[in-house]
Structure formats: structure tokens, C-alpha cells
Length: 378
Image (cartoon, rainbow, N blue to C red; front, side, top):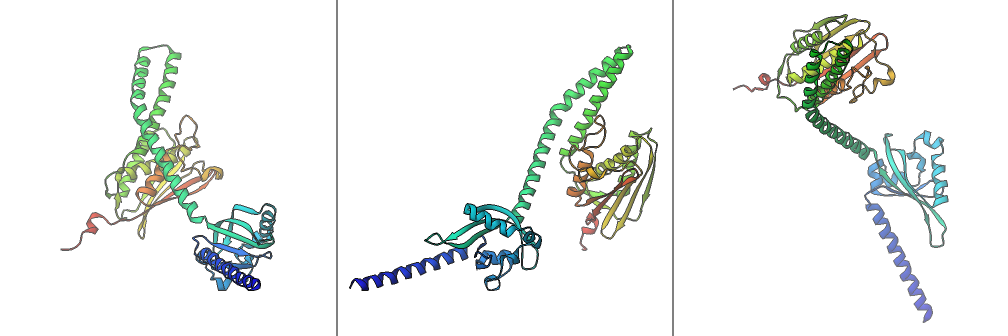
């Protein structure tokens, strides 16, 4: 009788164990993240649905094949799989190892792998279990959110700074000018002139910060060539003594743009002034081109100035970055220009430069329907 009870209990335990295994397999299969088990030889033994979605292989295609199928060759050659086995054997688990894996179509995907050792009731190793997380999309989203928050914080800071400093600055500048008119002592007048120039520079920063924080203007139809002529005229007044030859090569047949005219003028003026700055010492030539290429308006600003060093080329559109002397550069001009072109006009800026030879800034602006072309007949 006792033997019968033992056999019945054994069968019940076996059914319970089988049921537990089926439940565990179902849970793994329904898990939201890819879960893969492998043996000591890196042969894949199980593959859940989330792994199918991420990598493109069905369980029938991948189970029984080597994990190396998912690992880029250079990582296999560098010993990544051996390193993972070694670390897990030593510590029992390896948390959040960031690496790269390959989808079925060969495309790489950035993943975060947590691998732990699988053991039976006696402590004998059965292989490894890997939980895999796709971090490529979250990283892009986090970066975008970070950049948006950083820009929002910068705009708030700039707006507050402009409001709080502009009026006191104007008052101090007026007092300096009054004192300068009333004194005849040369050294004092020289010092006052230096102080006034520094305040004027601070005022320039305030104006550019105000431009940066200003709300977008109302949309209208823009004559691009008229904007270019205005930008060149303003820049000439500000650089009357500069030994620079300027030429406008305008295509008179290009279509009008739709956008905020003053903001496009601001962007073009920054590019023209940037060219003047590149040639303020040795002089040179600036040629501004306008033309239409399909559904794009292309504006090019080509100077024969000092060019841009390769080491700083990638940073020229960053806020407050400048290669000008500390006394003359604010580091906001090209940043504001880039923002207007890319954010307000959905365009882009390309830069070609050679140190000692010159630079060419090319602005590409997509055409939008004008008010006239948007109207529907009758």
C-alpha cells in the first residue's frame, strides 16, 4: 500500500513539475522583452515572441543555432561571447551590458543584455538566460527630449537676462557718454571710450538674445532677392571701412517663399556678417548667389576669408561658441541663423571650407505654396 502511495505521489510531482515548466515557458513566451536561453556552447535553446519581434527570426529558425549568428563579426573576433561566459561564471549574473546585435536582415541594433546562469536543484549549470532590451529607440528619444529641454532652458534664461539687463545697461551707457562729453583729459576719455565699447558689446549680446527669444513672425510672401539686397546693405553700413568686394548673383526668376521675412533677413545678415568677420584683416571678396533648384531655393554665401579649422567645424552652430576674439564675438549669430533656417523654414545649411582659402555657406529652403497658389478655382 505504501508503494502505491509513493508511485501516486511521484506521478503527481511529475505532473506538477511538468505544469510548472509549461507555465514558466508560457510566461517567458508572453514576456514583453526578448528572453533567450543558451547552453554552455552558446547554442540557443529557447526563444520567446519578443525575441522574434526584435530580431526577425522565428523560434523554428533560430533554436539549435549558435548565438554567434546574432553577434557582429568584429565582436565575435574580439572575444565578447567568451567574456560574457567568464563574467557570469565568476559572478553568477552580468547586469546591463550594452552591445550590438544583428537582426535577420543584417541591420544592427543597440541592445542592453542582462545574462544570468541557469542551475538545477543540485546547483548544476544548465546554461544561461539572457534578457535583452532594445535601447536604440529610447536613446534617440531621450537625446531628443534632452536637447528640447536644454533649448527651452536656454531660451528662458536668455529672455530673463535680456529683460533684466537691457534697461540698466542703457542707463549706464548714457551716463558714460555724458561724462565723456564733459571731460577733456585724454587718458580719462580713452578709458571712457573703452568702457563704452564694452557696454556696446554687451548691448549687442542683449539684442541677439532678444532676437533668439522672440516669437516667430507672421507668415507672408517673401521676395528672397530683396532680402539678400537688404542684408548686404545693412552689412555694408556696419563695415564701411572693410576692404571687402561684394557681388550679388541673383536669379530673378526664382519663386517667392512663404515665411517670416524679418527672420529670413536676420539669418542672411548673420551669414553676411560672418563672411565680413572672416575677411576683416586681410580683405577679400564675398559673392552671394540665389537660384531655384526644383522645389528648393538655394542661397550661397561664398567668401575668400580665413576659412574654418576642421577641429571646430562641427561646433560652429552651437550657442555661445565663437572663434572670434573675446571682445568681438558673442557666439549666437550662427546658432540663431541655423535655428531660423531649420526650424522656421524647414531648411538646412551646408558648409564647405578650407583654412586660408575661404568658406561657402549654402542654405537650402523648400518652397511652400503661396497664398495665391493655395486658392482654389471658383
